[in-house]
Image (cartoon, rainbow, N blue to C red; front, top):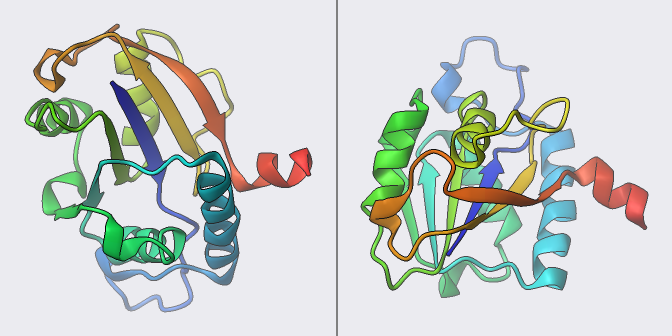
Length: 167
């Protein structure tokens, strides 16, 4: 089984009156979504199911990254992923139907970074889990209900900046 973690793209602080939940993406975040979209499409990293935080910036991130395939994907927007914690996210993942072989969680930091650490049992090997960062965890489980600490390994971590460097 494969777990893909995606942190929302860079959000805008332009409208100071907006609640954190309602912040849209910044121009930089919108550009980052195109970079990640191209990467996902080229590598065919389409998930069987996306569980996405219901904040505006995560929903906008998904709509931009998967704009060419939105009608083909199953997406669940979950308020549980906003201001969440690692154990709650593990619980959400554990309830996933086992027919799903590639699951994507779209959320926020520090939870994305802490989730990598919990599942791998190792410190996050990069400086930080950047906005629009994408991590792929190969899981050594047969059922999502088995997910816990030290049940997977980080097989990929990529950011828009790293993708641009590869070109």
